[in-house]
Amino acid sequence: MHDLLVTLLTLLPLDATPLPTVQNPVSPSGQGNGFAASILGGFFALGLIILAAVLICLKPKRHDPRDTPPPRPRPR
Image (cartoon, rainbow, N blue to C red; front, side, top):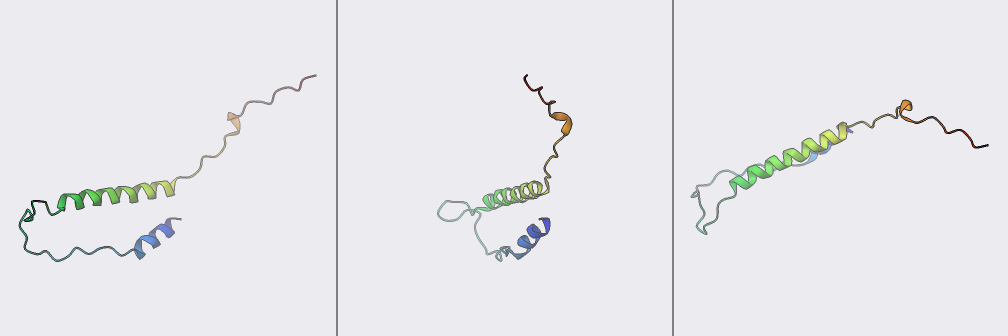
């Protein structure tokens, strides 16, 4: 399963950052250029990848026979 996840992640194209153009820190319309949003989005994506890796690595717990109560006696 781990190999499948790694294979899928290598097939996904990663967006290359565009070459920086000369910009004012604040665009003329009064809105920011979204730099902080891209950082937060990166942390969110990294968290999702880590969560997926942890969930893939989880193994089911085996049943412990000592946890089951003894059978009840049959009524006569």
